[in-house]
Image (cartoon, rainbow, N blue to C red; front, side, top):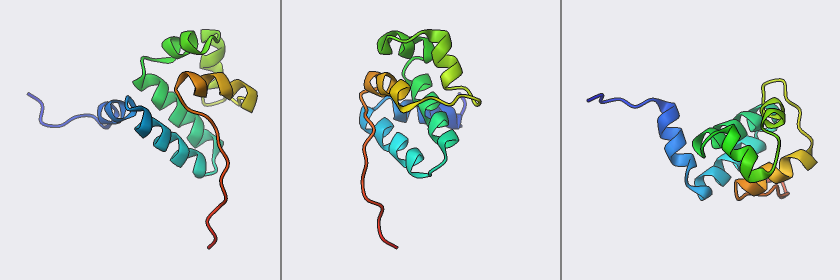
Length: 99
């Protein structure tokens, strides 16, 4: 038996919890880099059964979703809404903490 687990397996296990997934997405969005947020969306999608499963639940075309969440993807907020809804999340706005 392997004593060590891949970090992706641990992350996938954590991201199956809706609260953990929401916190992860929120922290990645707070980084201020859209690429980090898209990577986080791909991570959550992978943990929840993959892009194809997410596309089905979100009612989106699978190929379009693959392109949207790719490294070169640039989804609009309107496009993110059904994805986040399918993951049980939503975008929100809060005040930045003062320095």
